[in-house]
Amino acid sequence: MTSPTIAALFDLAQQQQPPQTDIDTGNLRTWILDNIIPLLLLVVALLLLWLGGGKGDNAGVMRRLGGVIVALAIVGLAVTNAGEGIGRWLAGLFTG
Image (cartoon, rainbow, N blue to C red; front, side, top):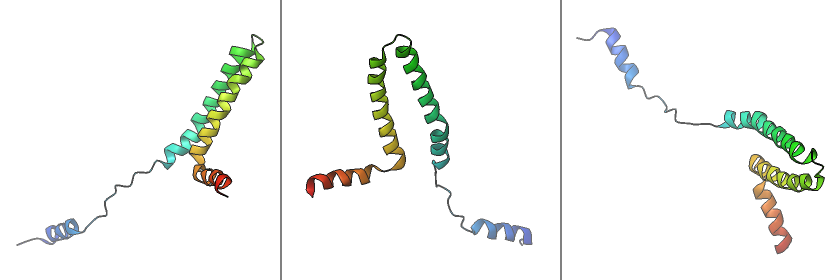
């Protein structure tokens, strides 16, 4: 003897629910790009000005700035997923 409530609960328990195992990092990536990257750029700029600009070592500042530009290019490639296209273009220069 089962009551209608128990039968309804039993039917509900038998229904298959889709597993929710999808993990998405899109929001974290957007937050990092919007907040962390500009903050790091500001810190690097201030450090360059403080370390070299105050002493008149403009050549040293420009050397360090070259490294910063290379690092920013690498971050840009990683963020935009443009590495494959650039690799194909570079390979096309040598293969014709």
